[in-house]
Length: 392
Image (cartoon, rainbow, N blue to C red; front, side, top):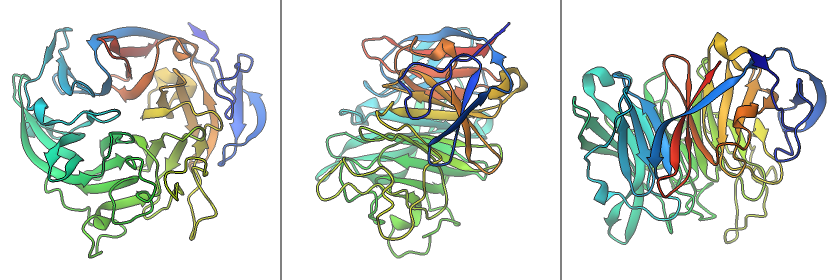
């Protein structure tokens, strides 16, 4: 069974949808060009609850056993749901994780060699050291009974934080084996363009040693932090994804406008510079800054829909959405499926009707080995869920 998609106009995502069976064509800057007939339909989507009773679930990954590993931001809980549906809390030193505002236990990545090395990676707030807390990337191992996680080492420390605002931290193991990290600016206006700060950046490192990745653009810098930089000038990176062609992408919260999806160019400046103070009236990508700024490949316009975690989704069962970037939205409470051409320019954005304001705040998207998709919904009081989404 197939049915039409509800398609949103790119610069007015919260406005009434276009007629069924249409798609919006846009250019790289996010401006509408024309409306054209949709080339193909996609399957009707079945949405069910895979895991319930969660508090602010931030990320979810599938283990080789078929179990799901889930991070809950606050109360900094690591939860496992078995293939049979049994849910349990993983024992680990959660008291060492600092939770405040938007910061807690956040990004999660499972090592490609997990079946042998049992390693996974998190990004979280961390206990107070010296004058304050930090956000850091840690490496862990999970025992074979899937009941206890052991801290192996801190891979990267010193990601800035203040009140916990803009502490977003996503991690991704890339195809080349590097660990990519997206960070928030900690609501400090100078951080995004300060190449000595790890805030408002995408970073890249060796997932075993914690050393900067050898092909990073500033790897020979005498400044320790600068050696980790892949890109800079970001506000609050909430999502990281890698396309099948190897390109890396970030998904970013805007201020009151212009959430962004960015194609990452090593050494690129993405143009967020809210100074003096923390002036959020400035453009998300300010082309008036010195040097050259990289334009977003998609932007929300006004108002923000608070884009969050995302994944490129593949499989013939997804019809016209095969190869699309599925991006969750918090304020928008909908899934955005973005199609990009071979050179990375936006072709259109659609929202499946089954995920158009019906499931609450959507935090992140993960594709399973069988091609189905998991989506975390953001809620407290045990109302957070992991949804299972599959074509009918």
